[in-house]
Image (cartoon, rainbow, N blue to C red; front, top):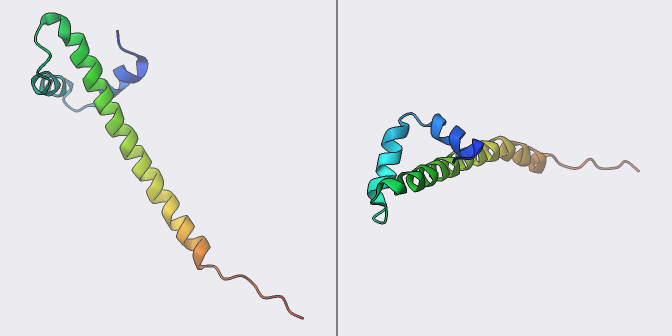
Length: 80
C-alpha cells in the first residue's frame, strides 16, 4: 500500500516503470516477487526527496533577491 504522497511522487515521474526497475537493480537485497512493494516504496520516497529538494531550491531562489535588496537599502538619517 502506498500513501497518497508516494502515489503522487510515482505519477510525477516521466518514466515510472524505469525508475522502479532502476531501484530494483540497484538494491541487491530485492530478489523476490514479494519485494516489488519495497521497490515501489523506495522509488516513491526517492522521487519525493528529489521533488522536495527542487521545491526548496526554487523557494531559496525567490527569497535570495529579497534578502539582497533589504541589505542594499541604507537607513535614513534623521535631521536635527
